[in-house]
Length: 118
Image 1: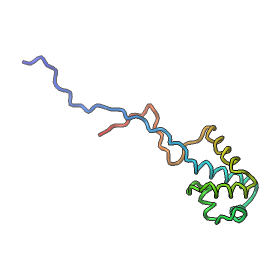
Image 2 (image 1 turned 90 degrees about the vertical axis):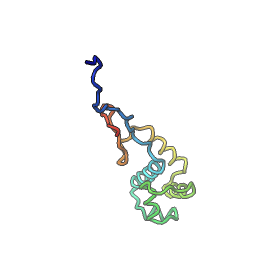
Image 3 (image 1 turned 135 degrees about the horizontal axis):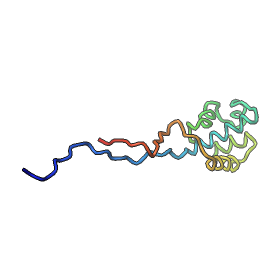
Image 4 (image 1 turned 45 degrees about the horizontal axis):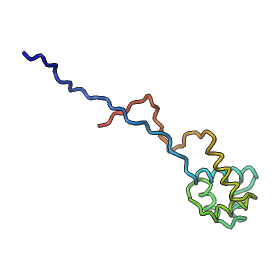
C-alpha cells in the first residue's frame, strides 16, 4: 500500500479583486451643477436654453450628463445662469471633494464577499 495522500479534487475558491466604484464622469458633475443652479434660481430649461441660445433638449441632455458639451456651450449655459465658466468648473470640482453616493451604474462589491472564477 502507498503512504501518499489521495489527491484533492475539490474546487479551490479564488477571490477576485473587488470591483470598486467607478470614478464620476465630468459631464455628470458639470450637468448636475448647471441643473442645481438653474433650479435654485427657479428658472425653467426653456428660459436658460433661450438665454444661452441652446436647444431645450440639448440643455436637458447636458444637465443629465448624457452629452459631453463643448467649452463654448458650457460657457453659454454658465453665462445664461449669471455664472462664469470657471464658477461652474469650480463647483463641479468641489462636488468631487464631497462623498458621493454610489452611482446607479456602479457595482461595488464588498471586500468580504468572495467571487468564484471558472
